[in-house]
Each structure stands twice: as structure tokens, then as C-alpha cells.
Image (cartoon, rainbow, N blue to C red; front, side, top):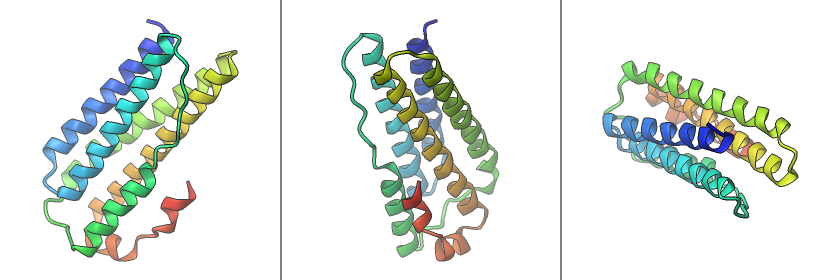
Length: 161
């Protein structure tokens, strides 16, 4: 399997995992967050598909952190903490591990490729995976203590990555 096929499969697996999480969570805000993460994986998949076809690819920043921050703010404003299941934390930690492995893979490939444009794409996707890890970290903290997290969340952290 070539590098692009492997990357595409990782992104497809990530999309499927997030869609499954979205289907199995009852909280509407978390559903939206997992759907947003799944959609971001589709964007990554399509980037690697175009790279595989030797098409010119330009990666633009996906405003995922601001989108997720807005979902959390809406959850806070509407006091939407129903449908949160602490037993799902293990699934969210598993998703974090997937994101961590993806980031490491893309950083490794960025160091292996010789084309500067490809290197830049791998680095940008690695940065996106880092953001996904950060989002999952916030979900885990939120699910662990939803009411306090929404009241005391450090929203500026979403702007720093």
C-alpha cells in the first residue's frame, strides 16, 4: 500500500469512528462536534486522494477550533449538559490515540518526502490532527465534569493553537 492509500485509509477510519461516536452520543453539542471532526477527516481524505492522482493541492486552514469553541459556548449558554455519558471517556481516549498516531505518521512522512509542497501538506495535516487531539482532550474534560467545565472553560486556549 502506498503512502497516499495508507493516509486515505487512516482518514476514512477516523471519519467512520467519529460518525459512530456521533450516532452513539445523546448530547446534541457532542453530536455536532463529532460530526465536525468526521467532516474534517473527509477533507483530509480528499487531499490525499488528489495527491495520489498527482493533482495540485492547496491546503487551506480549516477553522475547526473556532467552530468547536462556538459549539461549546452554545452548550454553555443553553446549559446543555444532558445526554452525557462518562462511560464513553474510554472511546474518546481511543480517538485521541488515533489522532496522536496520525499526527506522528504525517510528521514522519513530511521528513521523508523530497517535494516541498508535499512536505508542507503533511505538516499541515499533522497540525490538524494535533487540533483534533486538543478537541478530544476538551471533550474528555467536559464529560468528566460538564457543569463546572462549561462555567470555567478557558476559551482562550482554543485561539492559541
